[in-house]
Image (cartoon, rainbow, N blue to C red; front, top):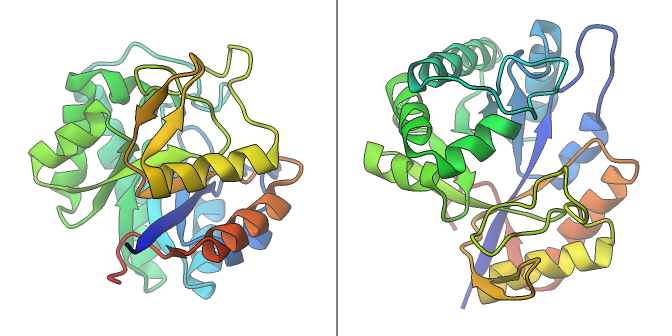
Length: 256
């Protein structure tokens, strides 16, 4: 059996005078970049620079729309209607699409950020609104959602190509959702454990939950985070270990 995975990372999260993440150093090790679109992070100059950097490294480009919450980095739940979710996504995807087009690139995917992502994973109406927004902007785009979530299901129903996403450095609950960051042991800080979790999800289709029960999972793209102290070293390590384990690492839009 041939195994493959896309390796994605959230990028372009600097804002004004504030610099966040290690985009330049991480890009050589990933295959898809999720670029912030100005609501939870990012600004026009950062969006343009990140698109340029990713294109130079031949990394696939995606929009990373979030909630309008710079202070909370888009990680705080907000009470929004499906109509608002639709408008937020259209607005942000359209903004990034303009920069990508101006630089001669092509957008590959859309992956909601933070609280918007987690809310849409369990709320079918929000998920449907986001899927509709992506489809209306560009139906050829991939929609990335939490593996087995409402976002993936509604994306398929909308006629989109979808990718089930898993996380290297997050723990899972029995229902397949991520352990909230506010709870203990939400993050996996042991690099060896994080890499082993990814390899098992790809090769076995299983993940061990916080309740110590194995759960079936589909892993088509894996998210790593680029703002940690050892983010660059981890990106390099996971890329090398995946390939050494017989797992091909390639962008979601690449046939192979």
